[in-house]
Length: 192
Ligand code: SF4
View: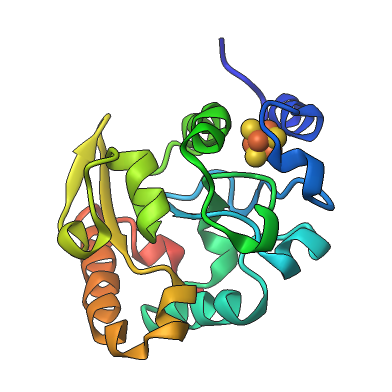
């Protein structure tokens, strides 16, 4: 059955499928163009996201905005979400059972957006989308294909803030995303 955005928002809002809902201020589903050809998937809401109800705000969010700007993409032309919709306590990594509980929402978001290219930000998104045996350090910068979508991973912006030496690898990954969008004739339509 095809879920609408309104129905999905209601389901997420009402969800108590894992304990993360007990400690969060609000659910953070995602934002951006709901028909974007490029979808970005991070890990989960942090403190500012939890307070503001928005994905990727604060320092990591600012860096993500700059990363997209480096390939001339405005944030509002892509769709951005996370693997879990509730903030894990003290920003810890979501547990496998929490990821599993929230995955149906992520899959519904993908089904609604129908992106052509998915950009995974960090190891948690890699595990959820590619499988538990994949490691960000090994699989970043490589294309994967799932269900007709091209998928590539890079480091999470928060990890880049902790270790800026990784930025040159992320720049290479961003260029691969840009080039794939160009190859699929999708890039020009995303420019401001
Ligand atoms: Fe539900 Fe996801 Fe929140 Fe867990 S993290 S309560 S599965 S919305």
